[in-house]
Amino acid sequence: MGFRFQKRIKLGGGFGLNVSKSGISPSLRTKMGTFSNKGYSTKTGISGVRYQSSGCMLIFAFIGLLSFIIYHLK
Image 1 (cartoon, rainbow, N blue to C red):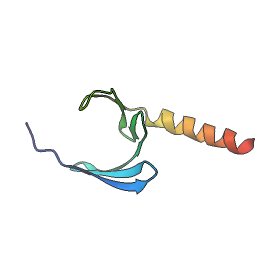
Image 2 (image 1 turned 180 degrees about the vertical axis):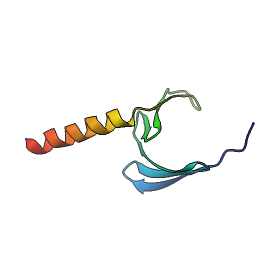
Image 3 (image 1 turned 45 degrees about the horizontal axis):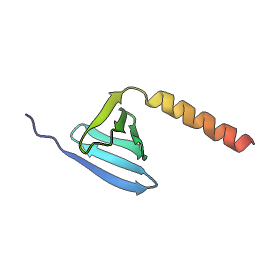
Image 4 (image 1 turned 90 degrees about the vertical axis):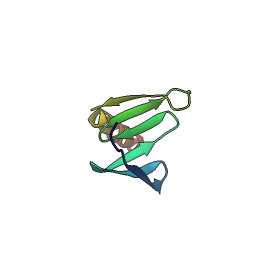
């Protein structure tokens, strides 16, 4: 097993920066899980167990932008 380093810098409102050996990436934490530019992870309700998937940040960004536009056009 290799050595793993990860640190989260909280920015408020669920937003944060994750610092690891591979670089820095932004993320958003919610009650349901965490979304980042590398993918998302969902909480399962069991301590230490989560579901993780990658490659969907573009979809979430598009949905968020669309929701923002619709909200402000009302």
